[in-house]
Amino acid sequence: METGKVIPGKVPTPRQGSLDRFFKLTERKTNVRTEILAGITTFLTMSYIIFVNPMILSDAGIPKEAALAATIYASVFCTILMALWANFPVAVAPGMGLNAFFAYTVVLGHGLSWQTALGAVFISGIVFFLLTVTGIRQKIVEGIPNVLKSAIAVGIGLFIAFIGFSNAGIVVANEATTVGLGDITSKGPLVAIFGLLLAAFLMAKKVKGSLLISILTTTVLAMIVGVVKHPTAVSDIVSLQLPSISETFLAMDLVGAVKYGIISIIFSFTIVELFDNLATLIGLSNKAGLVDKDGKIQNLDRALQADAVGTMASAAVGSTALNAYVENATGIAEGGRTGLTALTTGFLFAVMLIFAPIINFIPSAATAPILILVGALMLSEIKHISFDDFTDVIPAFLTIILMPLTYSIAEGLAFGFVSYTILKLLTGKGKQVHWIMYFVSIAFIINFIMAG
Image 1 (cartoon, helix red, strand yellow):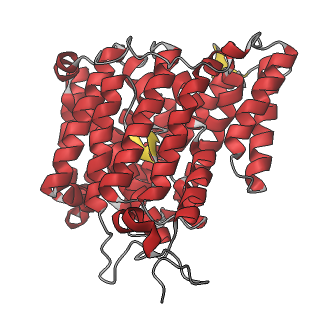
Image 2 (cartoon, helix red, strand yellow):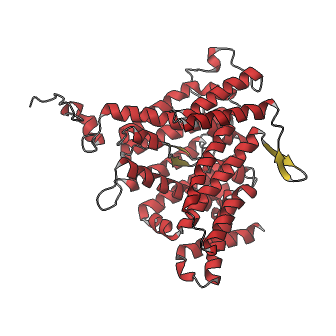
Image 3 (tube, one colour):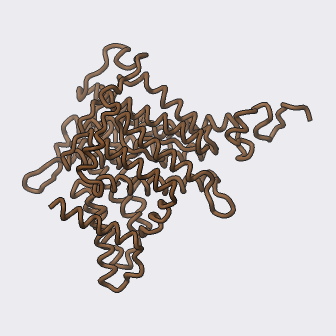
């Protein structure tokens, strides 16, 4: 056979050389074209975070343009790290839920400065990294009951959706009933409802980039009806001058984060980050065929290490903890099997830096529907909760309902963990409780006492 010739039906050839060897394209039965197309698909499905995350962080007081730049820089860095270090077809960005926890629980709820909150994110990245390299991570995951893992996802989903309805003006404060229906005949809520229906329709039709399309289309409608101003020059949309992160770079307050309390804030960041990442990476790895015959996932530890390092870098530039996104499943469905998929997505994220000025024209009415839909998608975890055992049902219910009602992911976690441990003990089912649950429950109880 003549060297370098492509045989029909075969995948990579020696002509691909270093790319083939580095990303193991032949071994994973893929090729450069497939990987690039998969990377583009992944980018289209998760690029909405570029606009949604800065809107959430700006509620915490972080300058919007700096938040957008930090979002992109953090996503590019960690996605490329995931590609080169772990060879995973997985892109990473600031996590939905974690950003809400950062803005609405830590900053607005507890009254911390965003600099202190960034310090907590950085420390949680260190903790997450240590848990990964020491193997403690696996013991923690094994110790938390599956019912609470599912309840955490559902609760965060409801919390995010509630924020979305609030930002859209569909749900508002009401002195008589605490919350109530807003004026849905006014322009803002009507535009948001349009965006919600459009995004839901596009997702139902499995249109690639449906959430991004919805954000941009709804923004145009908002400009037409006067909800938001419209650009008057090309420079309002595109700029060759990269957005600055000077206002947020290394602005994190580590001392303030430690002084406030590691248990409540940093622990919550770490737990949510741990479960979100591990569950997502396991699911994506199975879909990509990266699980060997013994059930082990190739380079899983490296992927978790990359995310931990990425979270520290994210805090350093001014954004929140990072997560592997379930939207990566779209790229994997297109054939993505290696880090070349992630590398492609990371490059496209970087290209978005020149479109940074557009963030000033995107209203909350355009991003709120995305929060609502993401919350709806997270509701699917409820199917894994068994309703036959009340010692499982009550902790799951408390976890789910108290996240949105207390406007705090941490409070929902605390009630869920503590009630699970106590109910099992009182009903003679203490043997079902892993030792890690006693440790976590006591930590939360101590935090309640200190906060009181």
